[in-house]
Image (spheres, helix red, strand yellow):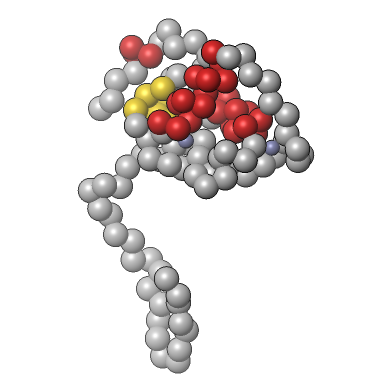
Amino acid sequence: IELHQSKGVTLKVMEYTYDDDLEELCPVCGDKVSGYHYGLLTCESCKGFFKRTVQNNKRYTCAENQECKIDKTQRKRCPFCRFQKCLSVGMRLEDSNAGKHLLP
Ligand SMILES: [Zn+2]
Ligand SMILES: [Zn+2]
């Protein structure tokens, strides 16, 4: 959407639409969540990524400064930073408490 500023026009930037499909977003990449995985709500992609990383005991390295931005479009670029973010947002290796978390 392009915003054109012209004289006498007040841009209404505060108008958000709250649709029914406004859902929780994945804390790692911002995609739509699919449910509780490894302790918190994440998307299907990050669930799979986290699972593969843990199960295969993968070791990643970051080509940058270990502070890559992880979002929906760039999450595949740096698995190291993605995994770090998974951990930092609270994803846990052990899923033993999963049953205690129930969706409202
Ligand atoms: Zn995600
Ligand atoms: Zn990185």
